[in-house]
Image 1: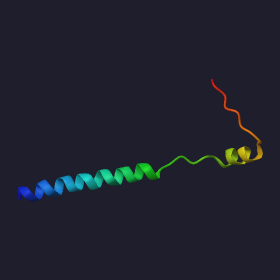
Image 2: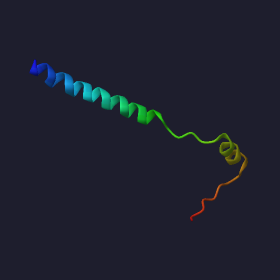
Image 3: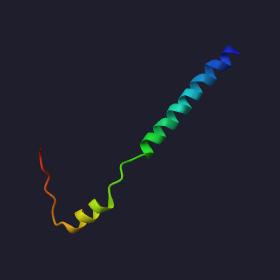
Image 4: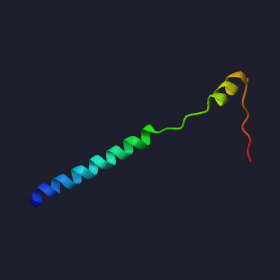
Length: 50
């Protein structure tokens, strides 16, 4: 019985962490459509430092 716990608990933990990582990686930043249209119309973009 203890041997099963030694295998099952790390396997479930690994699966849980893998699901969390997959969720984090798949949730990426999406830009606003207005920004994309603006950048396509503009010839060049100059960055500003604050």
